[in-house]
Length: 220
Image (cartoon, rainbow, N blue to C red; front, side, top):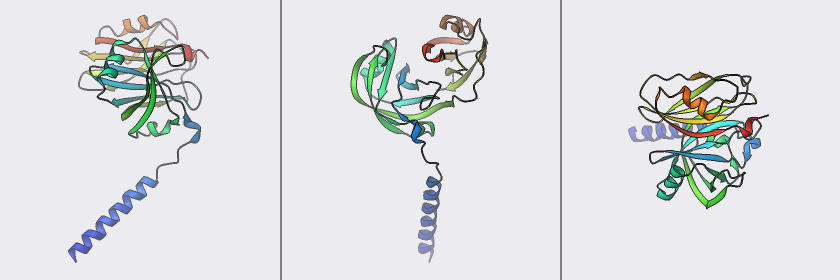
């Protein structure tokens, strides 16, 4: 009787788990597209940041850890000024909800839409862990006060993600080895400060490394 009870209990648990899986809302087909991303690195780790725009299907800031043992790719991302990827079409909401998935992509030195050079074709990239996601809705008006969200990648190492405002604005990722307290809001001379100006605001935080800075896609 105990064996039968255990079996029935396990079956009920499996049924409950299956029911829980079914509760996920259906994917919005409007988020299917070619979702370009920039690859950045720290140490031997690679991170992918979605290249957001103000409209669907790209109106999302998103940062993922990539699982890779490809030394050549790690070195490329570490040494090149800019590395982007052009993935095959997929539904971005799969990453927004934190799925672990493998995506096939072409890897470019430079921007894949702005005369970048294809370095690897049809490379399989494992999107391992969602670190950050923010939908670009209900945005603040463009102003001189800029907020950053902080993503912890270990005890002291942080990636700062600029909260994109209404146009004109900018997308920015900073790596900070935080040895002291660091503000998450900075005051600058304009709604779109230069990268150098933003870096000066964080000089007292610790070791600082700019990872990505983009203004062109946020002019209007």
